[in-house]
Image 1 (cartoon, rainbow, N blue to C red):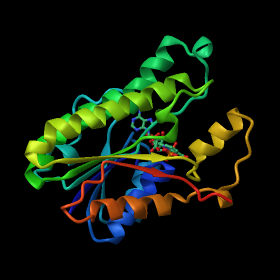
Image 2: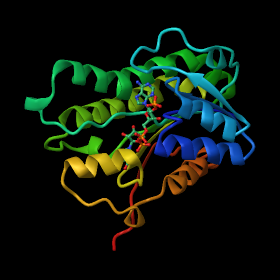
Image 3: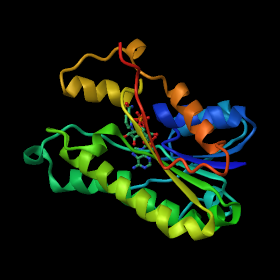
Length: 226
Ligand SMILES: NC(=O)c1ccc[n+]([C@@H]2O[C@H](COP(=O)([O-])OP(=O)(O)OC[C@H]3O[C@@H](n4cnc5c(N)ncnc54)[C@H](OP(=O)(O)O)[C@@H]3O)[C@@H](O)[C@H]2O)c1
């Protein structure tokens, strides 16, 4: 299968890249052009780098333009600045909506012909925080709520083309993003009490492999109660 993963250099995205590559899939790893992206693709031979800034997604790299069939597109890029409305300047709103919503929409649009050709699946890594308002996390929560509606609309639009759409709502995945967020909220960060990115990647693979007579539309993923 050909699998495109955004946020490939991040905690969740890099686990996705490694998990799909381990299965023998061809993986296109999307992130901004950095040494981290090059290092990941050097370490995972079946992963091809596709440098792309989702804030300005015009002009896709060849690694994406040349794809004729895409079985899976996982959107795992995102930013999650902790700030209330009163502390969120316009440019942070724009950046948050661009990276978390409009960039993913534009990349999906560009890859739809290849997704339709493969009757593929789009997976949006949303967030529990997108299901309700969160004080001091306004732009992030708003962007994730918008991502839900994007996914739900896309599912309806693409059903006739055989493209499936899944929203995954994680909470508490052990990554640097969560460490920063917990720090900003003054909450402890203990990776041992969280879901590992590898477990989330395994769960997404299970969704991708689900029998065709099941449509997994939404799934919530968090650490078990202790
Ligand atoms: N960790 C959690 O507990 C948790 C819970 C719920 C939802 N999520 C969601 O899961 C997703 C991944 O989170 P994570 O914890 O893996 O975060 P992370 O480790 O900070 O990774 C974020 C990724 O987003 C990419 N990114 C940021 N700005 C970008 C831009 N302008 N263009 C392209 N890529 C960009 C980063 O790549 P570069 O900076 O290298 O470009 C990086 O690969 C996010 O959408 C987050 O909201 C996470």
